[in-house]
Amino acid sequence: MIHTIDYHTGGEPFRVVTAGVPDIPGGTVLERREAASAPGIDRVRRLLCHEPRGHADMYGCFLVPPDDEDAHLGVLFWHKDGYSTACGHGTIALGVHAVETGLVKADPEGETDVVVDVPSGRVTARVRCSAGRVDAVTFRNVPSYVVARDIDLGPLAGTGRSPAGAAPGRLAGIRADVSYGGAIYASIPAAAFGLSVAPEHLTELIALGRAVKAALAAHPAARHPDDDRLSGIYGVVFHDDLGPGRQRNVTVFADGEVDRSPCGSGTAARLALLHDAGFTGTLVHESIVGTSFRAWVAGVTPEGIVPEVEGMAYRTGEHRFTLDPRDPVGTGFTLR
Image (cartoon, rainbow, N blue to C red):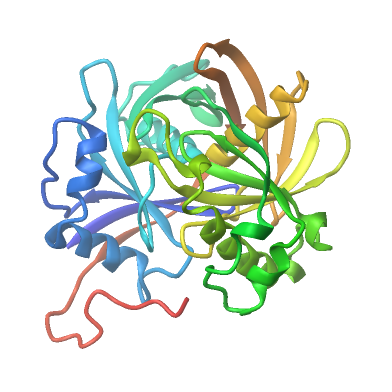
C-alpha cells in the first residue's frame, strides 16, 4: 500500500508520497537521489508516474531526511523519466503540504519558513497564512546564474529524437541562452520558430524541445561547473514577451514532458538571464494554461542572483495505491 497526497501548483501536478517507500540510503539528499535508481525503490516511482496510475507528464516526490537539523525535510523529485535536481512548483506544494499537515508549525496570521534540502541545495518555502489558511508561498531558490549566451544550435543539430522527425532540421539559425536555476535550462523565444506559447503549438514545441535538448547534450554549457551530478540540460524554456516585466512560457523538460505551471526553477533560470540583461523589477511569468508566478531578485551573491518565486498550490486528493501481483501491466507503461 502506497499513500500519497496530491496537489497542483499553477496546474502542474505534484504527488507527495507519505508512506510505502523503502528506505533510501545516503548521507545527503544528493546521494539519496543516486540511490533512488535502485530497482526496489524506482519501481515505486514507475508505479506512481506511469499509466494507469499516472501519465506522461506526472510529477511527484519522495520525502527523505534532510542533510542536517537546520532543514525541516529533504525531498527527491521525480517524473516519468527519473529524478530531477530541482523543482520550484514542487517546493511551493511542499510548503503548503508541510503547513496543512502539521509537519511544520505555522503562524496562522503571518509567514512561516519551511526549509527543504533538495538535490541542488537548500531552498526555502515561505508560507503566508491568514485566518489559519495558506494564501501564498514564496520559494527562495539556490543561487541562479547565466551559463552561456547566444549558442548557435544549427551546427549541433541532427541527433535529437523527435516525434515530428524534422525538428532537428528546424534548428538552423536558432540561438539559445543557457542558465542555471537549480537545474540547467536552455531559453529560446517561441517566435524564433514562428510559434507562440499556445496550446495549439504544443506538439511542435515538444518536438523542438527534444531536439534542442539533444543538440546541447554534449555542449560545455550542459555541464555544471562544480558537481557533474547536476549536469545536463534539464529543460527548454520557450517564451513569449508580453511587455515590460511580463512573459509567457512553456518548459519542455526530461523526455518531452510539459510543465503546466510557469516552472519554478525555470522561472529562476529566466530571471537570471533577465537580470543579467538589466531587468530589476518583478517578473510576472505566465504558463501555457494561463496560471502565473511572480518572481524577483532577493539578493546577489558571488555565485549568482537569489531568486524568489511566488505561487500557490492546492490539494487535489489523497490516494492509496496498490499493485496486484497478478496484474500483467505491473508497474505500468508510457505511450510517450
